[in-house]
Amino acid sequence: MKIPPWSLRLALAALMIFIASPAQAQPATKKIRMGISTTSIVFLPFYAAMHKGFYKDEGIDLELIVMPATLASTAVVTGDVDYNGAVTRVIGAAVQGRSLKVLIFTADRTLTFLMAKKEIRDGRDLKGRKIAGSSPGGSATLLAKFAMKHFGLDADRVSIMPMGGGDASRLAALESGVADATILGIPFNIYAVEKGYSELMFSGIS
Image (cartoon, rainbow, N blue to C red; front, side, top):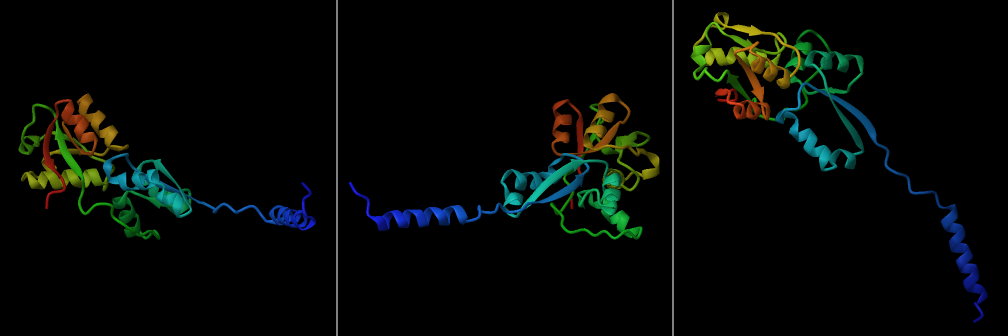
């Protein structure tokens, strides 16, 4: 069958247009680094949004980096990371005059628990004991002091030990006997309960 000349010209024109058309540009993504102090449930919204592709839809390539809270605040100032998820450290740094501010809270209360050795069943029994906190002024240290006040204990009557690392480090201190009690977030409090440790209080009480 003879192909009409006009159809050949039309096909050739279409081919030339296709070749000349630029490839569809892929949306550019912006790399964002965020420092987080632990892998507890507090940061679940960030992981969930990443898993669901919400950041990608907005052109953001988010990297969550676990690091000490104090280091994360410094890293924000120096530009090594863009955000710090440890709010108490951001507030502390801002009070010291650094150009930082809090943008959002992922929960309206702390999602942590006071955990203790198996034989300790009441918070009042922590008098004279050692509690693993975080760095001075860190959230776990402040929450340990709050817990002592809740149980009617003078914070000076217990030893709140400053410790580096996050929930995993504090759980290790409890398991090794270095500490008699500590503050743990979800899911680390669940790990402790499964191993027989006592849950003395939920720190997020009103």
